[in-house]
Image (cartoon, rainbow over all chains, first blue to last red; front, side, top):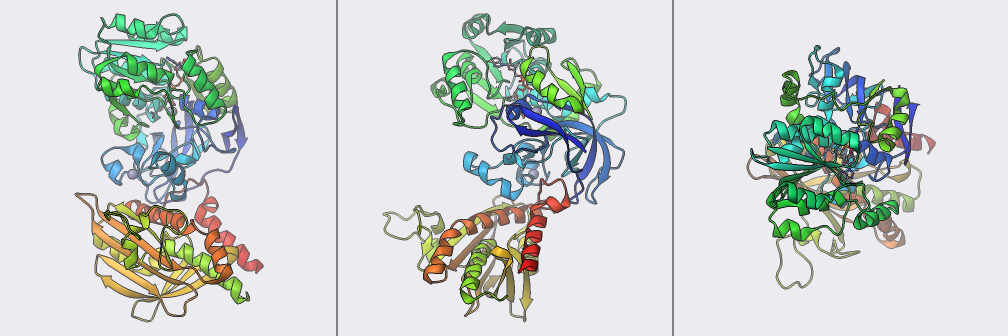
Length: 389
Length: 233
Ligand SMILES: NC(=O)c1ccc[n+]([C@@H]2O[C@H](COP(=O)([O-])OP(=O)(O)OC[C@H]3O[C@@H](n4cnc5c(N)ncnc54)[C@H](O)[C@@H]3O)[C@@H](O)[C@H]2O)c1
Ligand SMILES: [Zn+2]
Ligand SMILES: [Zn+2]
């Protein structure tokens, strides 16, 4: 089959690789009809997530048609499904309490050691990501082997297009969980750093959950414009002092909740961020947490901090004092996708959520490498790329 | 096998070490206590003692241990384990375990380096239905080892806490020391992986693999590697 493979930093290629086959009883094989490039893929592309090997098939946002099932699968050939990027068994302690991205049983035994050393514990398997999360072949391919297919994939009705439902695989639940983690209350003002797909869905979700105001922060005019169209007020961090602006806009209180939808590769020329850039380049495992630092200072006393943005290593100059002295709460994590898919599918169907507004480009899978390059280098206008195998 | 005794011993140790990890553990009374003279003994298992090189040996034995909580009833896990033939399903270095006779004797066939296999015969030294199985190598084995697995109810709905402990005595002599060094961490790592696979098998009915094809799974590669080495030998 044809698939997008990682070769090295800023080097991805569409290649011919072995077709997947059923290995375990609960597996299914999906023929991919649509797949997307995610901000998380950029972290892999930029080489800042450890444990990605040459030849790995990337992609964790995908959907398609069931073409083969193992004896333990509940899927049927011909069904149209969206697949969550988290691989979860459904039966372990964590899955039972819906902490799907913490599944004990989907990350192969011998792949868990590195995470255990770095984080204390290993998280679930993820499609098309690092070998620390299993090294599973991903969805930017013609076919995918989907383990635990009786638990993850959700069937979607034919009257909804691929583009309407594709993002159930990741960024829509991720934006939703980000807003849920901010524990939004009716009169709240919520600030969101990053107007990429995750930030945009977090903004939309926060408004659906009843936030009085959402303030969106980025430096790309077009992305800020998309945020504004959703109903957010916007701050361009190249033009305004974010901390001061947020204090003013919240009447001197500080915002009630903050969402970091930027993650480990924050942009910006703040002095501590430039140091982080250097440390990340020389590979000493430092995450660039500029946006998060700013968020911790901007949030009001007793406020809530939600972090959907991905971090993988260590950071320093972290305002730990602000966290403690202001009595903040932090919630974060890889999204427990399976927890949200059904509800969010209903919200797409009844029109509560719009999922297609952020798609800027549609490309054949063969041009996936161009998709990566532009999604990285032309971020302003390349907001979301959908690939067609 | 036409190897001379020395290399057989070497393979034996490696296998055993691996085996030990794989298997489960014996009650080395000493290993449940910390050695030496701490002021106040704490409640941590002895094999978690701090220290480099030898920090985890008790008398002449090295001890490895690991616990895992599995969301299945105690009796079920016990029964699966007690049927020793099942163990090779999740113990990577165990090719097979065959019962011999009727009093709980088994022959474990371990995959050793360089495509060799090593057999170790064990007997059951104590057993409590649904709670504990302990075994020991019979006198005269290449490798002197004992293992023990215990099954305890975990709090609430969490199932069963399975604890495995294996003790093994590296063969004496220069070669033995060399091998012990080479494989110093191996039993611990192997044991950790094996227990994770046991949990997967019991909780999900399968063992996770990220391979795309059957012939690319770890198990398949392991078997194949072994196969070709055997043929070459
Ligand atoms: N938690 C999860 O399960 C999960 C799932 C998907 C994505 N993610 C993560 O969410 C993050 C965002 O994903 P995305 O697809 O939207 O990525 P993206 O790269 O398209 O968007 C990131 C945005 O952040 C902006 N930005 C950079 N530095 C900033 C700063 N200092 N202040 C304000 N804005 C800044 C960028 O201009 C960009 O628009 C990534 O870290 C991604 O890995 C997490
Ligand atoms: Zn993603
Ligand atoms: Zn699970």
